[in-house]
Image (cartoon, rainbow, N blue to C red; front, top):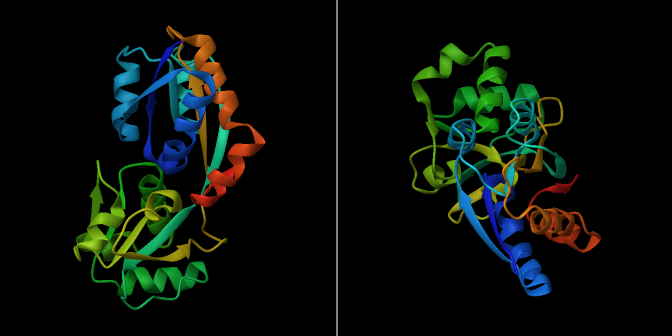
Length: 225
């Protein structure tokens, strides 16, 4: 039986943690997982770190394919960005892009991550013309969910992938970004060019794509890809 080494970002984490033990019981393989922020993962993989399987946003995985570090891409899930407040706090209107803009301008403090959702929000707030107005009250976090800052009362509004906000206690998920400004991220798996357990890693990817995995993926705030 193989030991599969996986490096993954957090967007798929909750579904992954439920599915991997099922895979291990079914196959006898062991899965060893390294969780890291996407920025760190890219740095480590570009630096030559070898692994069997990588789980990352598709755009970043495509870059690693172009560089020759990754040899395949299988899309696993679609992830939207959500908005959260501290549990019990008033819920601002985020029903449209304009409503969201008003809510962001009215908030005393805002937090988002250094991952794909944070990168997108920087551009969104620039396009909305409010980047300068909110600059002094925005915080970016790395290595913990943006929701944790909201739960501690350090930020009034928190933004991150819905799947990363759902498991955080002490916050209320107001909902996803409104459709007119939502950004969907594709979470994908890629086999590393230097994978030692190639067949077992392929089997794990196949397991994530089985129809039985779809309800778990949906339950954790994602859509199967």
